[in-house]
Image (cartoon, rainbow, N blue to C red; front, top):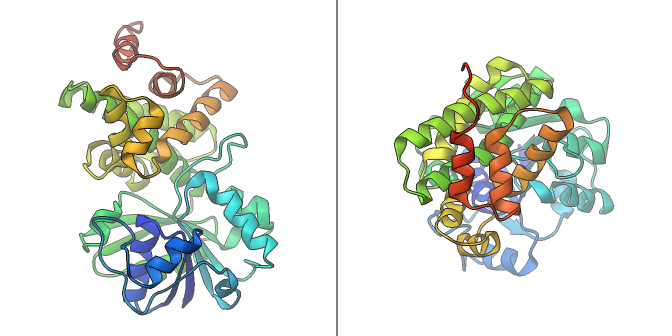
Length: 330
């Protein structure tokens, strides 16, 4: 297929390479014109530990390439999804009759829309053509062809299958799903718990505490996901438990890293500068916190992460609050 990948960060570039090696015709779009030029001239790599872009992948800052594409892959940061969609629409780009894949994990601040919903909100009447690609899949490992298993989710199972055919190969295995709500909620909220797990690492609390964050975090994830319309069993699969495990424990996790930096004494802005990349869990903690308030949900870990990130709460105090909550049955 002819496909444009929107977003030339580590994940977008990795998926572009995977698609190219799957024999598709791939164009990689980068918002920043100067960075696009450097990538096209192979003067920089998409990310520090990544691999070189194959010569056959065209990198561009122009949206004109989308006009004759059969498929489009969104791999932009979640809070820039709407802006990217508006750029397409304002440039006369229609997504009608295209396969649309979102590899972006997040919930939009304010509207509390999932990424597939943001795309639909801008373009209208294309939801059946949208698939979500999600699961435990760090770019740093996928680019090295480490065996990886993910989910292709869509309300239309034929769309999910088209996505699977596009991406699947001998190291990147894909299962189909129709619970697009559950898959997207799991993908977004696991990043918030990864920030919490990073705080545990920064405070040097150890594996016991990390296991508590993951298991109790899953409880909160299910609580949010079900009230928003997701199916409970989805959260015990790849896009729930699987993604939660990899992002909470991995050295590659940006969200775990930013939590660690904050627990070690950095303020949020300094931690983000030190990281040098976007940690989706920061903005998604705002959305998660707002969802909890909207539906009157008990979300103690999410609430404490929000307080640490945006209210300046001491991480030790946040952990103490969690540990001294009233006793109850599991």
